[in-house]
Length: 305
Image (cartoon, rainbow, N blue to C red; front, side, top):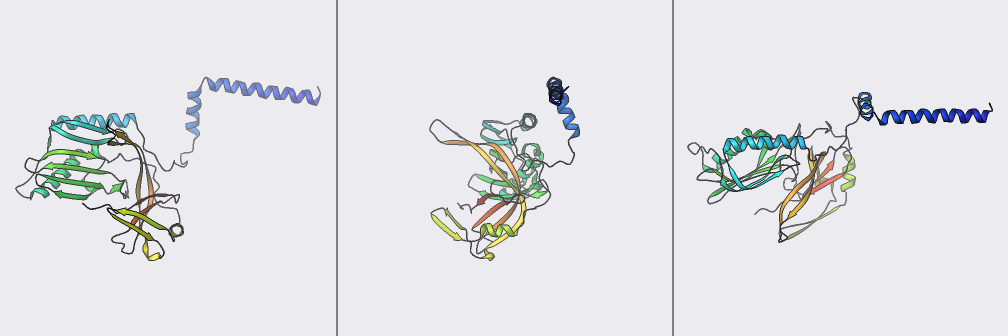
């Protein structure tokens, strides 16, 4: 046999062997996947950032918790919207039979009694909000003629502090005389893992990103322009978790937006950078990914009504 014929014969033998392998594994794809899972290194790099999307099993668990809560409090609301991605209550409004919070008016003024009762409700129904009263901070408490509005914001995301205007919130609007809950709204998403333990992106590179940058925004009727031209106007506050969310806007037949439906949520380990002459009252807060250095968002001050 010539060298050329021998080479052709060897090539055909290899080709036949390859086709046999493909045929075998084509009929045994589950075995192939199982073998790959077995040989995959245990300490392989986790995907970052993690992404929260709709998960049927997680949503079924949330639905069960909601049904249990509804039976416990025996409530009926005409408008019920679920956040199926974050697995939380988006809105309960227009009550027929409202939830009644237990107000202890004997020992507290009305606003304090409502605050205490709202915290107790969070603790009793933690699976609906993925947080308890120790994992939130009071965002605002507004006392009106007949109602009191309480807003809590997520303080912790796992073992890291939570920050930014996109972090989860829970709002209660309560009738003061009766303790009836007229509105309950939540953007408090379920927590997912795969976040690094600590920041790795060099802090000094953030100053290069921010040097001589000009920020422009409006606060009510006031238009503000601020140029970052001194290091004293930059403060690296802390490493936190910033939730980068994407939404679908839902409109009614008149073109009015009636709902912002969560599509996905990416929690990032982030540097919180405060900008301004008076850092206690910053011009802006900028969030950078603490692993990649990507700029995630700029939070400007919210108008106070």
